[in-house]
Length: 125
Image 1 (cartoon, rainbow, N blue to C red):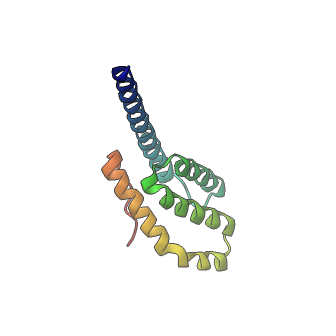
Image 2: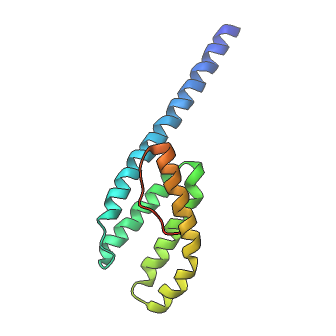
Image 3: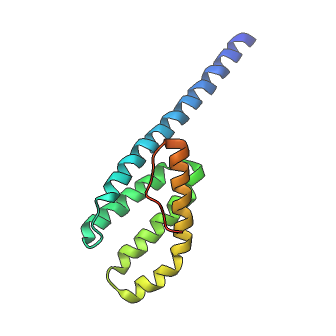
């Protein structure tokens, strides 16, 4: 009985680690796709930008705990930029949040390189 309990516990632990790897692998694959899509977005076309915001939300929901808060910063900034549209006053006010966005982006990029072997475009310092 004890051997059976140990075997079940080991199998469950193994299954949990496989699921975690699978989730991380999915995030990494989706991240590579997100980066490719983001590089093709023309910021002067609001429909394209709106689609990118939706994709960023998906990345936030899939992100591992190490970068989940960083994705939240990215999504929040993107939603506010989308809402600002071409309003220069709103965009100027939003620019005050750029340092937080830069830190979040750098953290996501470092995690992407280390965990996913995906190179993201450099975020300005």
